[in-house]
Length: 472
Image 1: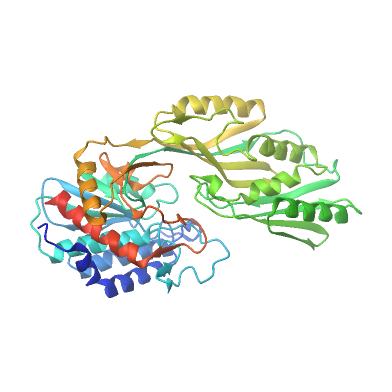
Image 2 (image 1 turned 90 degrees about the horizontal axis):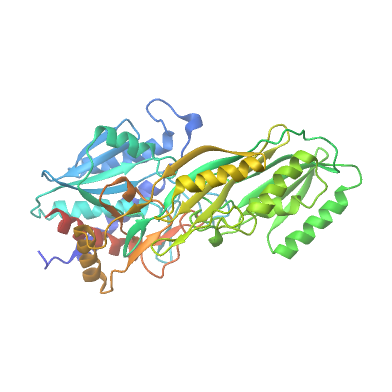
């Protein structure tokens, strides 16, 4: 079957591919537990995206299964072993500042723009069409092909937890949710809240009282907006406004101010990015906190903002906290202050994601961090830990995918490690495989997220041959 022109098979289906992809991208599948129902546990939009993929599969002759409306799968072929393709149809919130509607799936200059175009609806549709091509070519297989569709990858992975309670683990597989060529190692991911335990009150002892301060929506996103509402003693507003304007100019970041019912409102814009590498963005919350800490605050606010300044401003490697670590396999530990919140009536918190190397002992790191936080009247709460994932370089899976990638691209299949977490870590033997080609900008979780149409088509060809080689 080496004579199959996989890319030509993809181009023969290009129009229907784009149509089906736009239909999926036009669904706002952001986690919405506030409006969840029994048959839509993660929200209406998330369930709609899952149903869309399962219905598409049924129409094309795949066997489908909905697992408690939080996950599902599409099956083709038979065998005692199976090849798993792990995808997800939930997306992070769209954020602000898009040049076009983030759910219109507009095509401009050979790119399709939408939240989820890269992470992970575009790759999901590429993998689906790869399965479809293998099926329509009636190729002989000895293994079952199973596309697993998750709906909570961007949050707590409850979808795969639920799925694997009902269904067996695929023998081998890949997740089309990262970079080409092949990601053989993924850092561990620890998410948690650092919560203020200061016993003092938010009084009027200072010239400025922080009524509220907030920034960020998710642990794994660099916040692109921050707002503080402050109560200022009479006659001090003008000076603070002037200082704020000077700070914005000095730091070269956009911001604004306004007076609302006598309170001063300060807003600052950052640059969103995936939390796995905070240095790719500008953390609006940390920037605004860096300004606020210099004001004459009450004791409770001083305690919170000085802590933020001391341990998080200008440090994404955990050096100030004493938890920095690095190895030769996955590089440096990184930490992202994805959610910052302070309310005068209850104090503050910092929501963190830490991406740590495969040889890092997170239990010892957690112990060290807990001790430091206690000393500063903070606590570690809501801690979750997804352990690092690693597949041996000489495994059959990696050797097969390397062969396919090199044949399709003519380039060496360099093995990579990442700080992000993909569904590949849900498999005992799984790797992340595309769809972002070398040299392309990683705009996952950023405004104006896009993918080149030709890249998606090329990835589909790679996935089709990979599925066949793994399942034949």
